[in-house]
Amino acid sequence: MAKIDKKTLNRLYAKYNKREFVHPDPLEFLYNYDNAGDREVVGLIASALAYGRVAQILKSVSHVLKRLDASKKHLLNFKHRFTTGEEISALICGIKKVVKNYGSLEKLFCEGYCKRESLNDGLVYFVHELKKAGKHNLSTLLPDPLKKSPCKRLNLYLRWMVRSDAVDPGGWNEIPTSKLIVPLDVHMHRISRKLEMTERKAADIRTAEEITDFFRRIESSDPVKYDFALTRFGIRDDMNDSFCELIQ
Image (cartoon, rainbow, N blue to C red; front, side, top):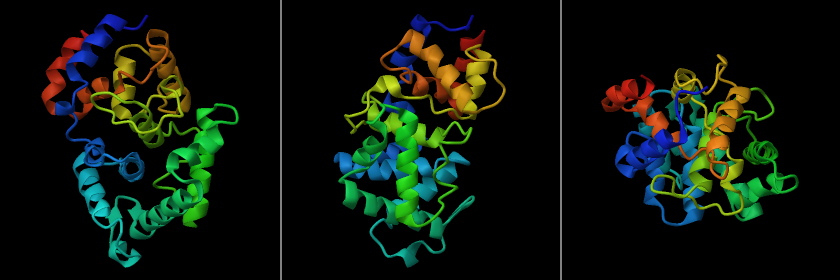
């Protein structure tokens, strides 16, 4: 039996699911855009670059957003860990093309999702069309949903766009929150194992689904509701003592 219950999770949500606990997180860039169309583009870029040290993530996202409407040459010298200027330029190009063709990134996602109401189908179609439009593999920015990857960054993006509360800004209205999968990163994986929500050692899609199923039994309509509050313990050093109290 897990070492955490709904009462404790709701207490954590009420205490930590606030904007004052967002920094440092690439999510903060989305708050600068009131228009959902702009926010979905910024969110995809921010989530795609959300790997590595958080300080470098924030620096890289800021750099790219300042050059969104600039020519490709302005990103030639860009480098974020394994991502090159050519790759981020290809992603931006792909985004512009699919928005022109579909009307929005949400409509692109729904083209794959709505046939069977399958989140994975939506992600597969979403990634395939962006890669095709960008004429690039985009391997460091968009993981392949057909493999065992937990697709942490894509699921993080969906959390930002589908949910709407004090932290997640929302903007997409066609995907129910009940369909979302936990964005499984090292912080959520470590916390989930400590709290015995999963025994799986591999941080793969099966583990992400198992943890999501645990949350779904507690909050069936919104299983990733507690993701932000729980992952703060791994991201913010000032919350280490609170995490120790939580797992005792």
